Amino acid sequence: DIQMTQSPSSLSASVGDRVTITCRASQTISIYLNWYLQQPGKVPKLLIYAASSLQSGVPSRFSGSGSGTDFTLTIDSLQPEDFATYYCQQSYSIPRTFGQGTEVEI
Amino acid sequence: EVQLVESGGGLVKPGGSLRLSCAASGFNFKEDWMNWVRQAPGKGLEWVGRIKSKADGGAIDYAAPVKGRFTMSRDDFENTLYLQMNSLKSEDTAIYYCTTDGRFGGDYFDYWGQGTLVTVSS
Image (cartoon, rainbow over all chains, first blue to last red; front, side, top):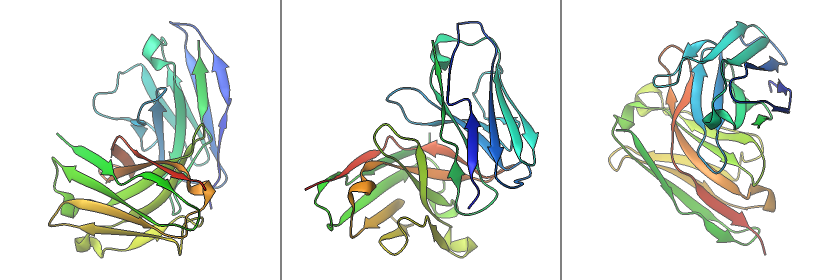
């Protein structure tokens, strides 16, 4: 199975900050990497697919990059609704696997 | 508008069974691949399994922790996805989400239901 490791596990930030979360795969996954946001008590929501494609309706302050084993999610100008947990997920092979999550706190 | 509505969760004793349903609307269900993803209380996301469309062969894949105990199926006439869960363990306690499998430009979980809570406890 492909292991996905996110860093950091949590971070503190302020409204307006630029935040970067990294995700590393245990083997190459090309660009088969997706990012999700989960606000407290809510359903996960797709932000980025195929490493850098923005899902329809997602604000442009979210961006993704990377290929192979190392990936990054960047949030420009953090907004109050962005305080949540972020997960990366590989879709290169079965079983699909998620990172452990990164909690972005105020 | 795509809608996924899960039902069937509840409290069950270890070793018991439960069947979850996911009613789909707003898209061509029979052409879509579908997944179950679960989340234990206070924990991260865990993929449970995927079922392909019948047009694509209908193959089903499972995560190792549920293989042999859980069975996914679909009713394309009723636009419903199912998850039959047998020999339940305490570690199966989680919110279970059904998701669509978006495959345009990638492979991702693009739509999610609101989830149904399964609690396995004596």
